[in-house]
Length: 405
Image 1 (cartoon, rainbow, N blue to C red):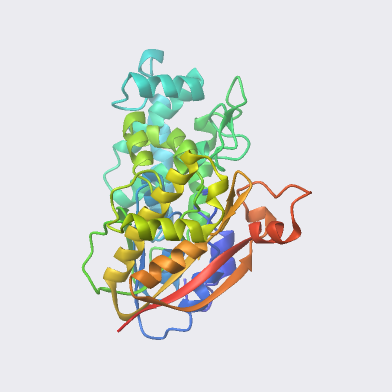
Image 2 (image 1 turned 60 degrees about the vertical axis):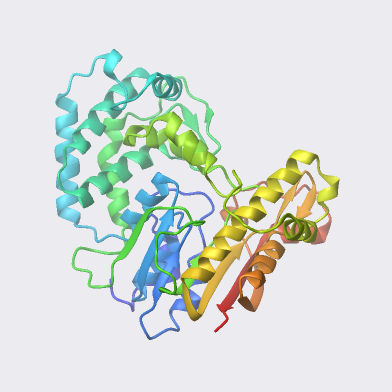
């Protein structure tokens, strides 16, 4: 795709896989399109990969990390060159192979699934769906070409991660709020697989002939990045809200078919930002000062104090890593949403600003942007909310920092 046809509107329309609370493509676009010199871009919490897709589409080198294996898969596919005919043929062949398999009910589970994972699969998938998904996953696993295999895994996943009707017994999986709704899956995997892969391919922004710089993404922790100091020109990322969306709640419905056991996914969820402490070296007095600056936490029960403290400690480690990997005078663009906890307004953006200052990141500018209601993944404020509060809940804060020379 040429730079002349690449646009934030196109990135917003064409997504290879559903993902809650995606970053607006216009945010990285505004800063990246103005740089004529090729930059080294990092998103340490890549999510669905919007910042990396925009970076590649505007001619920059990009790398990203995420703890969520499905986020890594989605971003890998979203930033990859799609060899359309090769992938379509592979999808047809995999479906043909899968249909010839005779999967007994007692074997209708993901490969290497333990008993806990099997119980999870039985709860969310009926027997026929389990048989067909088992056959498809076995067929896909035999594909030798790694890139092609990932496109097919993405297609299989998007049959499961849906809003209304997919191949599971759940609704609202794409918003990470799955609830069991059906007695029988609305669609059979064999009937949907090829069209799901086609949707992935139609959303792909880069074709096999694309000469733009490649983007790389892998599993990694934003609090301890496996990259060299002063190696990044620009960081673009969207840290989680304090009461962040529990992505794993919905994603695990597809990740079990990609070879992950429930116990391993539970561990990944426990390692997420805000879920555990231990990364930050900041003293308790400074942590307490930042927590107080975020809002009236004294009005909250003690367990929420611990949650806010964990969040600040983890974000301190994230900001410290961002400062470490940036070159001198390098910049960081962070998109953060303020939120409410038990009716108390908590300004996550205040914490980010104070932590950045503590790590020699100078704030260049800050602005609020409205989040369209159709793009939000949190409930709208109640009708009797204070007007100013309701307005804040529909906005996010975009903050730009520079590393002191």
